[in-house]
Length: 355
Image (cartoon, rainbow, N blue to C red; front, side, top):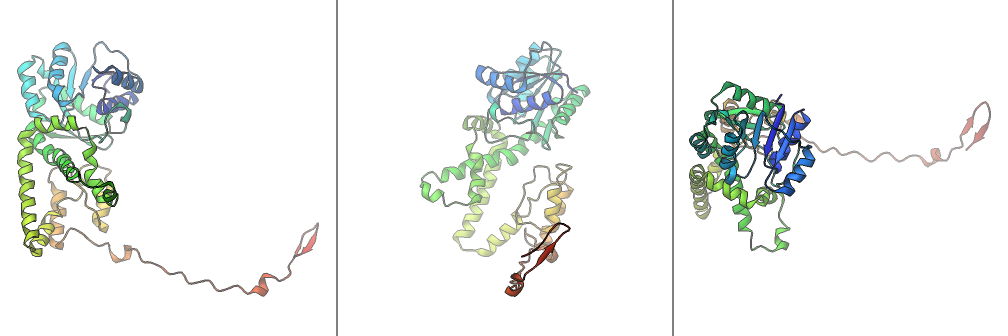
């Protein structure tokens, strides 16, 4: 167990990890330059001042992340400093260049969050069952790796290891791109009337849900990870151009082949969480929904992909014996009125009545 933890950043992520660590028995101090945010978070996690923390967790906006990490490393030579930022490559270069204490730095990224921010939205179970990415080129000490594993375990997550470059390329695809697309789709609805928007189904609401996130925060993330994001956007544009051309030329065969190819790559990954039984059940018994894989293309994903290639489409009917079959219950036979009004005698040791 990690005994003493200081958290710098009293937002959603910092307060959530503080709640979880406090519940696990750690002493927790949470600080922030915003006094009102710090007071709320401190009240929630029952913060207490710590002189020499074993671990300092940085959960500040990405624009301030490198500066705060380096300050905490230089001011706390006996503490391990860990950041939770969503972009890593430039950060590691700055830490190694500007801090003589970089051996005490570890870098993690919990793949968790909400579209609403602030300590008031914090949850102790925010990281439960979620994937965490540990940055391999930030670890120079075996003890640091053990601390990272302990932290993730205390928060209820599963730790995966990637280099900073692999991490930035991956999150560009599975986190940053969905945010961009959600925002772009929401932007395309700007001139629609409320009356027309109210006619939209759940699909549009799901696609645009992320667009309600913090605009400043995400703008900083996009620019910080521009090197990995722009090639992914180019790929999406190329896909959209292909689809546009097929639609414009009324080439239904091209559209069918495109859908068959691209709708079968998104089944859930069984290796993500050891309690992810839903993935197996939906695969075995068929699905009318498609779940996104948040992990690498491993043997499970390959198995799903090959299966759907052989079937020829991304949707599988349930076995016949598991399908819903409507049952018509026949009208009950009318009761004989004579029986309803027949006189009956009820007798006990104390009374006898006829009704």
